[in-house]
Length: 113
Length: 313
Image (cartoon, rainbow over all chains, first blue to last red; front, top):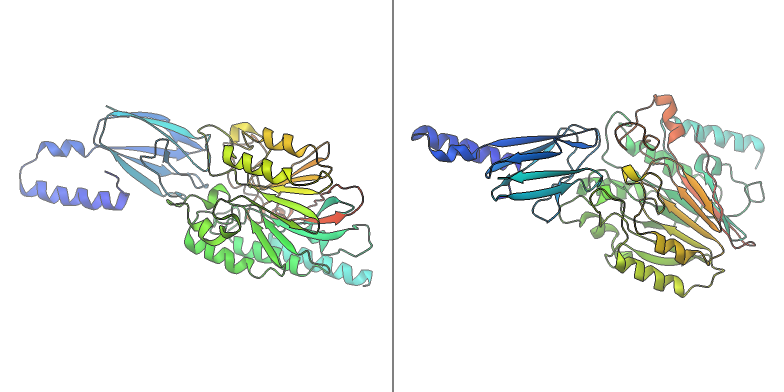
């Protein structure tokens, strides 16, 4: 369930090869992604609504490192320096709150449908 | 020593600091701690106007691993800071590092920081973690290196030269949208620790984030520090130190002096200026004026500690 960007990319590539050899299947619909840009000490957008199976990527565009930490312990990034990212695949519907542990005034929400 | 030699050391110190980086010396005089900027402390003369016994030097926010425009060489500014400490005619026994030793909590950053800090010719170094030191997934990199003093809790106390030092951690429990947190366990521990001390004991409390609220929208404060501050009021001399905000802010409240230290790495904006508390880019010839160290000495008559700071430019 938890994926890092690199691992996710290789698995997507492997899936693409499989799909190319067979016919397109409905599993391709799970390969949706959402990007949250971290800029000016804000998660942008602050709140996102995605479908179950979406991989959310947080991309840091600040000169200051940030983290993404789930308030219920579901996911926790290391410090993301400038232009570094962290990804997590949301399988289960629900509302997920997250915060930057370096700057706890930075908060955001993912709603998974 | 002649004035000329002091002038020479002053010039050398300023040359050393041309690219920034310094700390603060705390002089203890009659129980009062006075902070002196380290470049000035290099001119310290026993019996001079900066009277008192050099007690400890505070350095903060070394951010080893930071490499952006605001200071592409934080190793050098820390090294120059250490050189200033080592060049002092009367060196203090202690160094206190008030956190953000590293920028990204990476093992290589901690290793490099330890290599650099090992050059300090003070006998002891005491640390607390900053939030930049605790972003590794298991929060073990700081504690595996600096956790022994506190049995891996992060908070601990010790005595030196009749002064009681209390090291606190306010970066491990954070509340979304909120300030730093000490937590019930630590507050109970510090209350018990202080209970055993007489009111005439000079107290130094240090943590990474400010223990009083400087700017809430940026989390520059500690949400549950009020109980701690109440417990400190009976003491005749209390010095409360922190880093985190990369600039000096001081406040005196009764017998308590609050002091935030500069960073040896890069300055940050004044509260509320700009999008957030990130690295502040300044002209290279201004950087040295915005980095710093604090040092303290002890003066033994009024049972209070006093602090002094100045810029290094």
